[in-house]
Amino acid sequence: MTERVVIVGAGQAGGRLAAILRKQGWEGGITLLGDEFDPPYERPPLSKEVLADDADPLVGRLFPDTFYQEQEIALLLARSAASLDPVAKRIQVGHENLDYGTLVLATGARARRLACEGADLPGIFLLRNTEDARGLRPRLQPGAHVVLIGGGFIGLEGAASARKRGCMVTVLEAQPQLLGRVADPAVAEVIQNLHRAKGVEIRCGAQLEAFEGHGRLQAVRLTDGTRIPAEIAVVGIGAVPNQELAVAAGIDCDNGIVVDAATRTSAPDVLAIGDVTAQSHAWLGARVRLESWENAELQAQAAANTILGRPAAAVGAPWFWTDQFDLNLQILGGRCPHDRVVSRGNPADGPWCHFFLKDERIVTACLGNAGRERRAVKQLMDSRAPVEPAALADPGTSLRSLVPKA
Ligand SMILES: Cc1cc2nc3c(=O)[nH]c(=O)nc-3n(C[C@H](O)[C@H](O)[C@H](O)COP(=O)(O)OP(=O)(O)OC[C@H]3O[C@@H](n4cnc5c(N)ncnc54)[C@H](O)[C@@H]3O)c2cc1C
Image 1 (cartoon, helix red, strand yellow):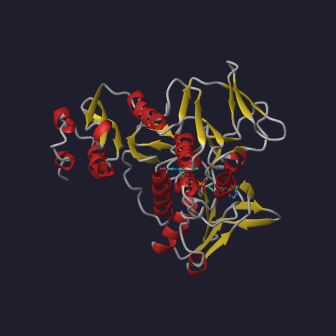
Image 2 (tube, helix red, strand yellow):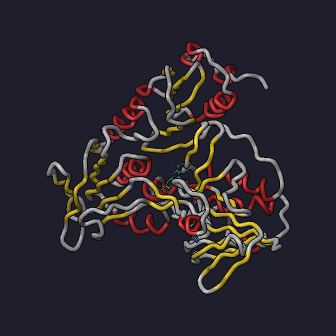
Image 3 (cartoon, protein in one colour):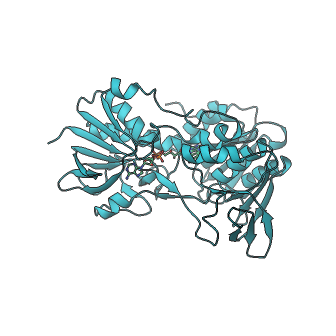
């Protein structure tokens, strides 16, 4: 058996796994293969400081360039895995075959594209990688008309960044509210009010029909006939898992590569981690595909545990954050059914929290500029302990004091 771990996808999850394996004692070979030109990096800054300020697009790089050689990690960039044979335990990369002892699919997700008329006009961008950010940033000139298609995190962060650069910004959201997949209407309203106050035009219930222009983008047309002038459009309508390798190899996929808590797929010695996975999530009690920084970190550690023969760690409430203008929003849990909403603080005058409770337990928490409460809220949610709504609502009661003692 080849004692080599081959990781396909040199993004956040893949890069982190390679490093954890070395740090935690894996002595076999490690190959980290990625189809981008850049070494592994974290993506969150791309829609924030990289677009809004002039941060280096690789500000989120995981490790210095010398790290991989020092750690004896064979980093192969700008190379794509074309196929996978789980019986022969081999992947094909160009004209070469790479044998593995354990294969880890960390291929992430790609930005979903639009297929409407004019969708290939110059001036239309996606925002997934450093190349996208490098192409988009110089186009965000003061006074430029920028339309963000999609009122999710990428669209709203892109809107905030473009506005900070002095662009005239419109967000188009097809659903009746922003952030429909993840946030309650009350939280979506706070975000909408913030954007409007900063001069972003928000149009919910807006159905895009076509991009218009001669040789370059000039306008966006809606199904109701409205024409919005635009030199730049950014399409942020969600992401599609890069699961094709797994599908072609006969591995179970269902909007992502299906994995268990130990990141095992349906094929022996093939694991999968990060945005590409559909995992049975013990805390949520459902199969979900999580696209978040935290999930990439946790599944990288979970895969390392499996490879090193250690048990899987317990999984708690998922966590995600977004930064838009001067708002830092942290969301814990999922958009689960709830029977009570408790508010603590007020968005108009400082940090605030909205807690969504089901049977006296917090199932979702949204923290606005209240990041220092995240640890306590997460512990409270992970414990699944019942909470007293009056105590939650009272800013005079420390949230930490509500966490049950271990
Ligand atoms: C602009 C942006 C902002 C974000 N902001 C936040 C945030 O604020 N908070 C948060 O929690 N999360 C945020 N996220 C989400 C977070 O970045 C992702 O969840 C995380 O990057 C997932 O890591 P991953 O390794 O699974 O996937 P990726 O980082 O996408 O890495 C997958 C890699 O695999 C490569 N690949 C795919 N197929 C192949 C193949 N066949 N062969 C070789 N290589 C292949 C891909 O090109 C890519 O380089 C953001 C994402 C984006 C795009």
